[in-house]
Image (cartoon, rainbow, N blue to C red; front, side, top):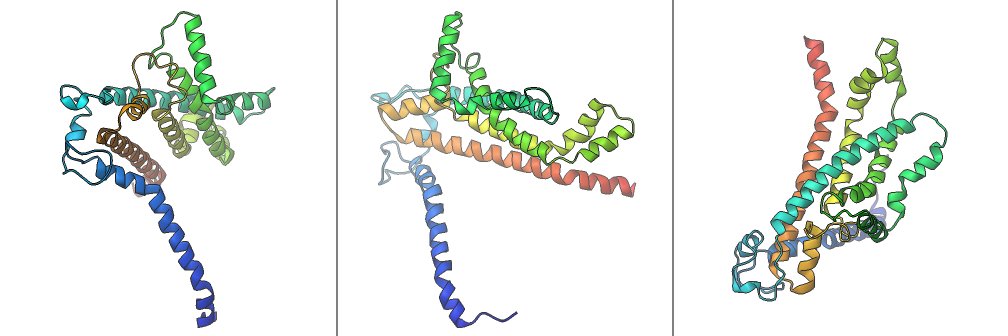
Length: 293
């Protein structure tokens, strides 16, 4: 293979420069606001939401869990971000589990041909097609019509499941479409029934897809606003409290909330990434150990 000449280097060198500049600009646009938010969240007690910094401290992080009791509360949104974050976390975990189980069951059923499979498939995707505000308003009127008070968990949970289920379903359906049926057929030929085949053969192979589906369910529910605002009742979730804080007076306290939310998201992604990697390589190690024994 001939070596590149100086002409080729000069001709295509500008392409590498343009791509490098594009990557740098893209990274700065993506992570630059987060870096600024992190820096401003460590403002001193007299600092504001802009530069220059007025000292550095953890004052605004402390105020996340102790919002009242100081003169700084005058003109500032007093929200309990700690309890609001806990509500969002509990809600997201429940939505993640329910949506993933339902999506796995629905995708497994879609592997077989049956009557009205096409209409049912599109019915599963209704939650994506309908605007979030419309869904929230419809559910709010429904709960009000049957005399049930709106609650951050009881009336919000079905709305979030309706929103996250289609995404989880699409992920599971994509994974099932690439699934090799011969492994299941081999297990059944050896005498395993449908349940044992699913539990011992299908489910272990599908673990990466199930975890990806669960990650979708958690992240979509954790920061959902449009489908929550009309059905959550008097107790806010974290996105609602964040919006309330931005409509009255912006302080570095809201930046501290953003930093914590981002760190939680990164932690969840890291945990799921580790579990997916472990589930991918564990069968290989297990097979080697069994072969050695």
